[in-house]
Amino acid sequence: MIGVLVSGNGTNLQALLDAGLPVRAVASNRKDAYALVRAREAGIPVATFSLDCHANRAERDLVLAMWLEEHGVELVVLAGYMHLLTEPFLRRFPNCIVNVHPSLLPSFPGAHAIDDALAAGVETTGVTVHLVDEGLDTGPVLAQEEVPVEPRETLVERVHAVEHRLLPEVVRELCLAAH
Ligand code: GAR
Image 1 (cartoon, protein in one colour):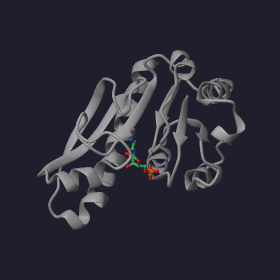
Image 2 (cartoon, helix red, strand yellow):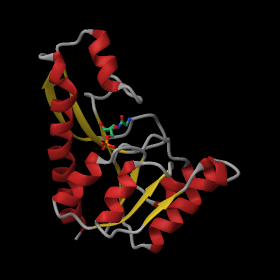
Image 3 (cartoon, helix red, strand yellow):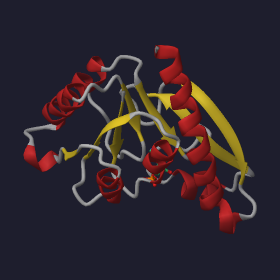
């Protein structure tokens, strides 16, 4: 069973849903994330765990992890989730948290990877799917695919297209390996 964490539009969540993967819970740090609308439309339980409602990140992450566990989640996918996870969360899902990131990590970690790659003038960027640790877009790489930067006008679209194919592929493999 998969739990997905989101902060934004949720096109990667949509790709997981469209691939027929067993997403059983979707949580966000932002109540206005459009991804929550997508989840509700798919009939999936949603919840928001805003930092404003908790004493600190560690406490918020513990409550979030417990909510996912209550929904039978074994594998957590970060699909555009823009907060770092703290130890209380990581401890509950050891080696079972996956992130998708729009660059060839370790190049261009952070929230603006595509813009950063354009600004750096590299010829090739790409997509990384990796296991999550306490760092910013660090952790063992599971899959990477290159995307040429040119033509620049369509780079965002082409990177997202690769994400929407690569993330469900890797998540499907992890689900098969676990059962
Ligand atoms: C995706 O491009 C994802 O790789 C990126 O946020 C976007 C979310 O889009 N994640 C990161 O940059 C993580 N550091 P989505 O909400 O439409 O899936």
